[in-house]
Image 1 (cartoon, one colour):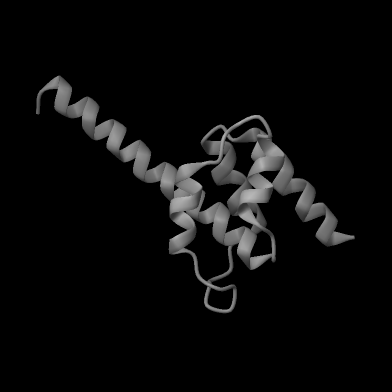
Image 2 (cartoon, helix red, strand yellow; image 1 turned 180 degrees about the vertical axis):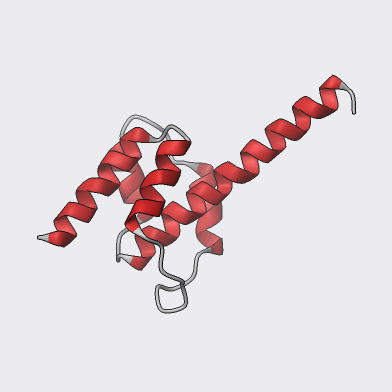
Length: 99
């Protein structure tokens, strides 16, 4: 592999992992009766609609069909990708649920 092919592979892997992160977030929201696009908009109110989020929503399932996604898992995945603002909003939703 030459340098350009390696760079392209790294970018492709990142994009695939980013999609997985967004899918985990979206499914977690659905599992907790939250609207993923609304939660995203709370975290990033000045950003346009997230096209990848819209795309992965088609891959989510009802909460009855889904495996459990632990709160810590979604928080860790969001923080791993630098989505600290989104992780903050998710943490607030977790705390609301606990009250």
